[in-house]
Image 1 (cartoon, rainbow, N blue to C red):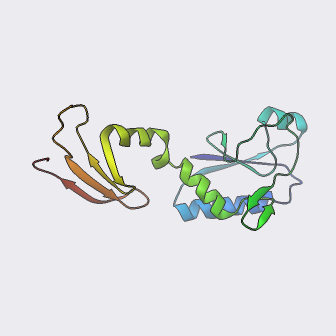
Image 2: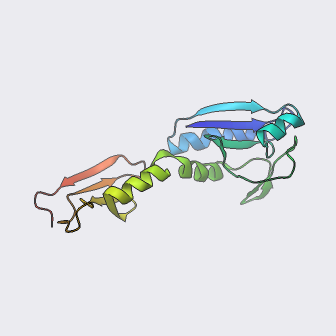
Image 3: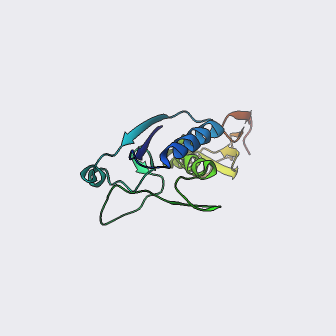
Length: 159
């Protein structure tokens, strides 16, 4: 995962944003390359579609996307549980990062739909879905919250 933190030098909040980002990554057990992108002038802000400082992009997508008529060197505010702040909280970043992590990607969700039926968020029964008269689940897989396998059970006679 690549994360770009866009900011401008005079922003009083980008350092707090960076610290909250690092704490969120650590709390989620995620590894990411953090690229600091210093926006220096209004033409750069327009070219980068800069939504204000600090802005967080994962794989080129802003975590709090938005459209503007003009993109300029400006501060950005975030609606936190304690009111408007100049940087998102660690919890806000954790929530956004969870949505971006590989096991929540559209591709992994697609593979769950194609190859398994989910009983709970941490358990799946895998079916040979391509057969119209499927004999039922062929195995059950249970994982923890980080999708590490806790239990794998293969069924000899699927029913």
